[in-house]
Length: 404
Image (cartoon, rainbow, N blue to C red; front, side, top):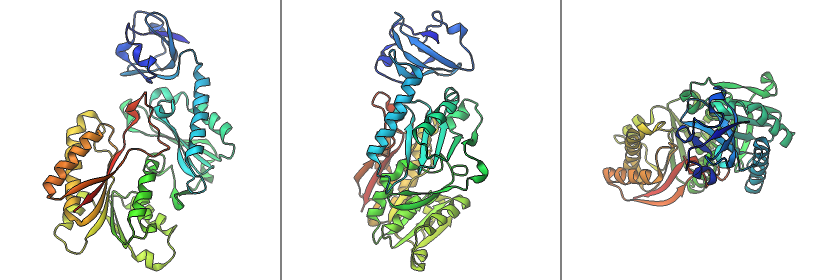
């Protein structure tokens, strides 16, 4: 491996096991910097005093120049293998696979493997995502490790299409690393004993939003006898959980007709009678417009509302406009929810902090003229660990609100 030397004093973050080395930390006049492959390669990282700090993958021309996969004198690929095994053992300890057989196996820096996401759908399907150029070089290696770890895997799919790839000018990848595409028709999985259909080739992310597992369970527990509104419903996992929890009725709203059709399919996997079918209402409409329209109607009164929108802030410069959008949609929901209603509200925008999110809720409640109390908080699912040495991995935040 070629050697990268850091500027004096810049070794502190790596000694604290942070996974990123920024371009400004590299001493370009020392080591093998001038000889590096501009397409990226594995490098050994040393302090300005030539102390070995670890090894990582270098990418030219980016703010984050090196992503670290091992620290100290640990070998690069050995560290990755050990981290994969450790991640697998952690999930086995956390997840009751008799009730839930879909979960995140590798959560990037949270599991010591920067830029890589791997979700499992039963023991048959694994979906791998590479978020940056550096990790593209590791895809084949990761596939081999998965197959060795879980011999029952029939399909390993790469679905690399994140916004971070687009920012690096990388193409989207959607294809099979193991298994034949013409034999893959999607898969039915279980979460908290509820069945869902997943097709990673067609869905967002890896095919499902697994980070909300605990919140779907809580929605199910709170839905008994309530009229539920699930906005930005996507494939209807919250809607299905509410129905299984005994909701009086469930309305699902999404601007995507194809998402609504998939949501209907998930409901059909779990219903037993025509009576349950009649509890469901499907709306293909912009959520903001739908909520504002409810203010002039007396026909629909909900006492449990779910707001789980896509990321409004995809870049740091979007923070102010995103907070305004979050405030607007929460205000509209607070205006129409029944007194004594429960509002589940979320943000998956990395650049919106929990503190900012709570402050936004304060202003939304003030403008709506409602009494709002926080009765619960949510970060990420238990299979989405955040590395204490890399807190940037925290992106999802959610609040459970009691509105009167």
